[in-house]
Length: 413
Image (tube, rainbow, N blue to C red; front, top):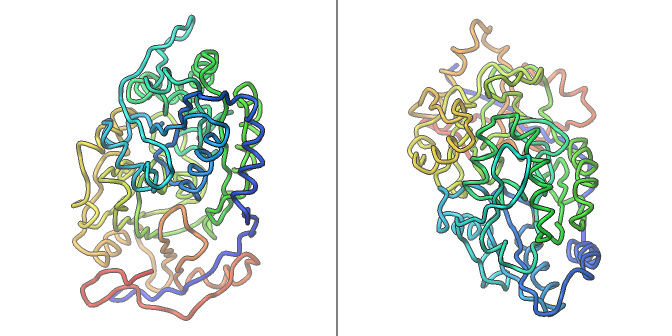
């Protein structure tokens, strides 16, 4: 295959996003007003994953607390991310526009933690020092299906309270037990954190299939364990999916920590690569190519091992110290392994096709996406068009386009 001509299609996911974020957020934050004391120092926990409207939501939360005469400050609630350094975690927040200048509250970043008193837990439980010494904590996080496991609580406020606020020590203490720690120990450790009385509540965010904020819910601490599973199911029911379950080659323009906790969303690609965890039944993708690493990842290429082939420009951006810190803390080493490295995007495609075995030329089932967070627009090969034309969620958006320039690089999406 000397060229690759693909057709751009549009996935017609429901437009159920919130149109007035400020109003909805303010109405929700009012539920927490009885908990805010005048003069109280309130820590606002913000994570490392990309969240729609995160700067606006953080800034509005700061303004809400200041209007109640509290003293808000920001803390990174992101476990071992950012190379497990205070500076690295500040850099991640800065990437999202979370700075004192832009949100109106100082950012206090530290990897120091306080070990919490508990009984019966097989793992120690920790809390960020600044959070522990504050008068209260409000967590802000997206609730969504996790990329490592599926259980009652996945990505959300409960996990952030344990692993995010626990910093590197908290993350390592849970991940030491593998998937069992994530599924069984997080809920029990969360009870320890919540019983300190430090967590006032959280702002839970749900995004739709277009990666847009579709629901905001402020939850008091005592209600988080009950309410979060409902929000998780709502998020799961609004997750996007690739338009077909059988793919020869999936071309992904970029991966990154801002796009998924695993760099590449395992729920989208149907690969987990965790020892002892069953692989999803669908979609079935023979070869995955990833071309680049997002700048917002700051060199963290965790999840690169989910691919079969990567392009050299991605490899050259990997900060192995940062990546390995995140990978070894998680204990899922398979995801940190380096795939075959191709010099160009076009060479990567040819290598990926060899991995598919015998496929008749012209019948290759190929899809190209920007990343696993944005799959509302994508490119598909001719072999997929007949079935997609019958899909009511799909619109053919343009004529065929050659995907590569004269140097074998992908043309802009």
